[in-house]
Length: 264
Image (tube, rainbow, N blue to C red; front, side, top):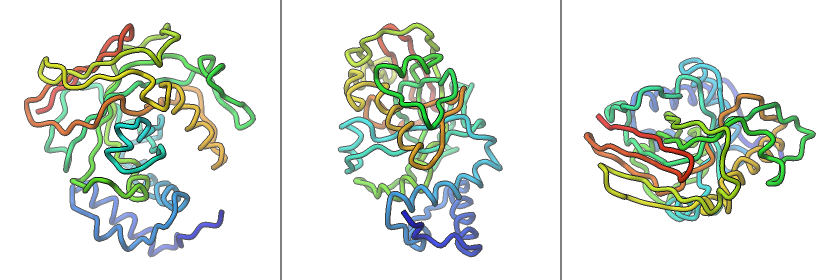
């Protein structure tokens, strides 16, 4: 498909301003309207340029986040397909405390994270039957997003262009041995020691590994292959939560352990 957006110097300067507005928590909805993004293809082209500025500040790419992989999330956002964004090195949080003032509108998503054990070349066909051969570990995880107080249902083109809102990742217990029936595995999200939400693995495109297969094939369309060591967030098992200061969250997946986060 031909590129419909004109990535000339003036356009790229506008993308830089757009990125800077993100960093300064400035509402940029009016600025985004100037970009005339009309297709999913255009949105990912924009994302590539947007992420060049992220790379300078947040280090090299270490993985991908996949969004809108459950019916709960698709309903919340008014769409019927997944999307992806890039995770950068400095977005991996080792600290389990997050400061709300670092975000315009902090959201937390409860996910399964996996790490790829070897390169997946463009010629490799990954299916539900062999994907486990490419996984080093899986782990419960939290993704930190910032939706900039957007109105729902969302504009998926804007979501993709803004790197699918990824602002951080917290990875819990890493498991090199894991259940074969993840689609039937239960998860629970706790808020301040009380159950807030629960779900099963089949709510994420039928199986938690299916989003990773979708991503691998989607990237192939762009002639991009998955490298050894890549981290993939496979999509939220529960609805996005927008926390308050003082909130504490724990996300557990049966037989896989948990991940914790505190909001200050």
